[in-house]
Image (cartoon, protein in one colour):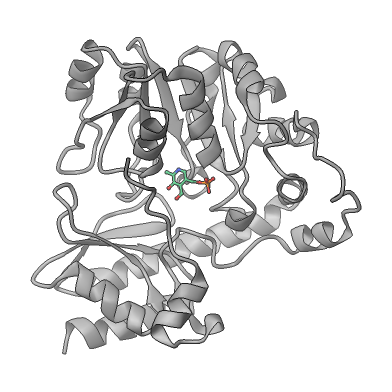
Length: 349
Ligand SMILES: Cc1ncc(COP(=O)(O)O)c(C=O)c1O
């Protein structure tokens, strides 16, 4: 199987570019440039029980999430990042050879995790606007599939999947995993549908909006029939004590975190306008904290390399599904300014 294409650590970028660590502009991981709530740092430094195993059943965290999510605590299970929950869903449902539908291009973890559990990925390409191709999915489902993954907003395209489309998928005899990792930026959720559909799983994360990517904590909302089995097969103590403390404290500081989300949304608008001014870049509208651009009359990979040399990290794609694209995470205003200055230099010279 292909290994997961994870983002390189900051140290690697410093080594390669010679730009000091504190001057690297990291716009390749859809992380939160404002970091976590200051309350999280305080709570982590004061927590007295690092020598004791964390609560394997995550009682306090699941209870606190109940109010934030608007779903019963029993239906919520946390993971070491939502990545781990994707893996647990595969662990629960997939026997070798079982089919999993993947609406590509999309987040790489769905393919990786299916491969790791020896499932068979059935890739159904999205249409020219990156919408899920419902008719093709229905056809693929007709040949038997156990699970479908849909990220909404989708990574890397940034678009939402309309409710009507999800409702059609829920009619099919398979588990629908709706990945709402970027929910706080889109403000659109279908979590309330989990109560009515015993084949819907909604995944969320603290990595993006709450600035906790480094601590690894995400959660899923599961129908009762799935939650009870998932609790049995998940690894014990899977969310470490620091991550549980940080997530709980984040939920107590929503005003602060909503302020940083608001700043990111304002910057997303500004970044979009700036990118659209480059004749060689075609930014796609985004409901998340990143913007995908198709690149015309220039090589996406060379933009990536030129930016990297200047200490600015982005992602590029050049494959049959994404021919000559770059993806830029929304940073702080000064990150946008530095990026635009570098792009001027690279694209207009
Ligand atoms: C769609 C999507 N889902 C899940 C994740 C992973 O989130 P976590 O950090 O919670 O594992 C990402 C990260 O980029 C993502 O883009």
